[in-house]
Image 1 (cartoon, rainbow, N blue to C red):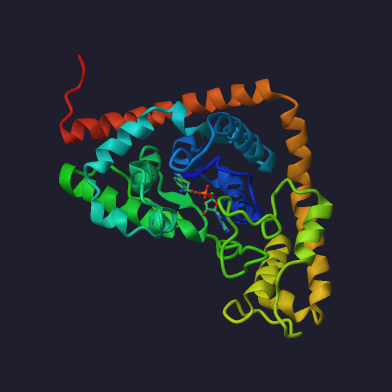
Image 2: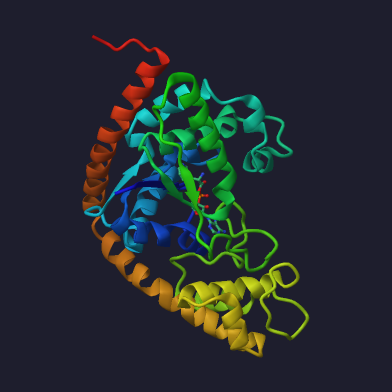
Length: 327
Ligand code: TYM
């Protein structure tokens, strides 16, 4: 079975974009792939985060992933910092990556804009991400649209490493779903839904209760026309709703658009479909939260499985670049 790997930052509550763009597909990939998924706590250190908050969010994110349907019997779920090879591999790749290519990363540019003091970790962030991927010989990386550029960089760096030291790393490919890859903020449909932007009404959290979901969808920004048409360029808000209802019900946005004449009806059905889509996850979340010991045990097991694969790859790469093996 082909390998997949993906990761999520524990930097905030899981939202609909994370779920539709990535996690839902991670769940499906468990049966067709040898799947590795990690909560990337080291990546979360690149922005300000309180130590206690980071610890509890790391746990909570793992619980959310289990609730979403990741099954440790069918995939390897672990916390990034529990496998020390991630930072070791990142160093090897930092010695291959260039300042120029990292400086071109849009996420770096956005997150560092206007700051007079920029952390080195924020700059080298995509190299750590490349290390996450190559350590597991992952061929496919299921992610949302916003990760395409980081995946291109990972490919570039892996290719350069292989060119210089021999064919030791698998060159990964991004796997972006045809729909749900770019869920937009309901209040600002010109920008993506995001954990790091404070837009409570525009962000549907996977743990929002039904009343909250209904409220947020009802207040979603659309346009001044009254024609239901899928056209992300000129009607971003409405098209986002059409896409959400389409993904939730397995239809296409254009097909969904054909079934509605009034914005209000579309909003009502979209909210109902999202409530229904998230209900099983929310129910499982409650069960799991009641058993923290079990979650810790599952993560320890995941880390052990991950370490076996990661340490073999790291050793291979370390020897290839000329590091002397300890006796
Ligand atoms: P993160 O934590 O920002 O997001 C996790 C996943 O959710 C997707 N996503 C979205 N998809 C659709 N619409 C949205 N509005 C939306 N917002 C987020 C992201 O594309 C992602 O797939 N750098 C990564 C984490 C990472 C990683 C990795 C990913 C670290 N190492 C190795 C893959 C492989 C990130 O910050 O994702």
